[in-house]
Image (cartoon, rainbow, N blue to C red; front, side, top):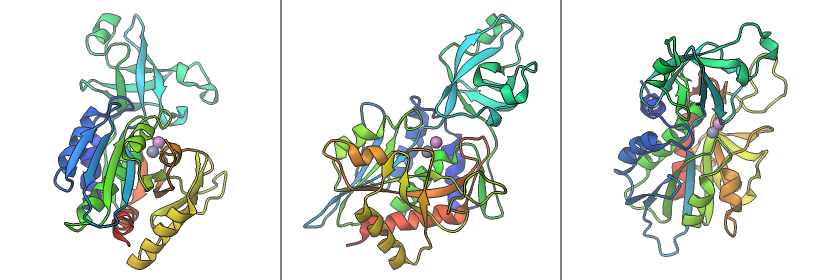
Length: 334
Ligand code: CO
Ligand code: ZN
């Protein structure tokens, strides 16, 4: 079993939809405490870990990974106990048919759909959660309107890949924790690691975290799409297992050429294979790291991942390890 999978099991299994990140924050904090000098939680709930630098001309470098996940929130319970819900973050109907979910209190359910509607016409409004009861009262004994739920699938490692719900972005958090562990005892620069909240609902947590740190340069860590599946709509020059991707651009940001170059240099020095990412649809915390307060040079390291936002996301272990090594080298380069 890889270190990446061990972390994915623990972090991925922690409950943490956007706005409800307490459990996942606790798991990350317990791990990070061993490698950092101080840990703080900001007003919105982002965890900011600092490893103090000893250099004379030290810079403040920030690495940020969002720790929230997509999920659903109960909006209405009918007289038979079926629960209607709204999305928390970006959900596609095709990823939600007859899949298990879990509420914060451990209640499990299955998302299913109104059969009278043709599959192609299904919308989230036509779906419901079945928690195995027959009345509103029995449903309300375990789920209330406003309760959040997350995907509840199993996680596995096989043939060099990891699979399961919430690689986005617990695997990004895992890569950051692995990088932390690789750092030498003393470092030149002041290093900040932010595990941010509410990325999936509109990059809401990273701005305040970046404001608090006011970094000289910042790097976000998240997943990105791949272009290596059969009959895809758009070509994308990013594939599973070819190394972590240095982001050039996505729909929220154009990365700083200086940060991109520093990442390239770190990869070359450490002999890490990398690829380049232009994500046409989707934004990341990188945007907020770049434009918060007076702004900061910002870039991103992405882990190529298939089936993003489904309960069965899939990525390569070697790309996670490469991302961790790349971050560690970037943070310690002159
Ligand atoms: Co996402
Ligand atoms: Zn993400």
